Image (cartoon, rainbow, N blue to C red; front, side, top):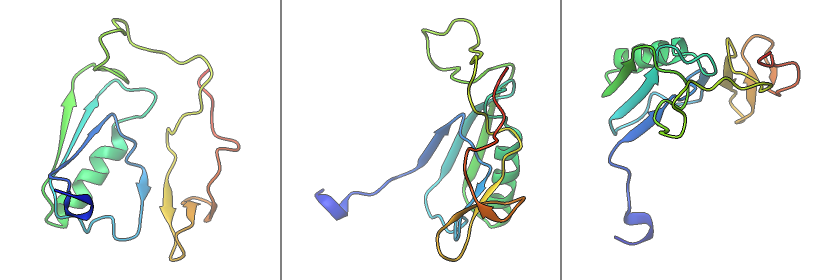
Length: 122
């Protein structure tokens, strides 16, 4: 296959942040598989549960595979112990959405999203 002939056969996300809602994001034809740890405190699993529920209600082929007690970057063999980031901005409880002009907004304030004021892991 060359250039535009290549296509994805599936979308696979590892510990993905699912808290964003984009225009037409339910309009997907390929399967989606999300792999996420239930103990991920950097990118919590709750937003992915809601995203999967929304896509399943829209009739899409989507599945969330939950790994009990797994933390963020659970698949990296170098991290035998769960990672705790000392001072990183986190997406906890952060909800973003895309407006009709393609601008990413903070869903709570309806203003353009920035990392300004986002919580840091202590």
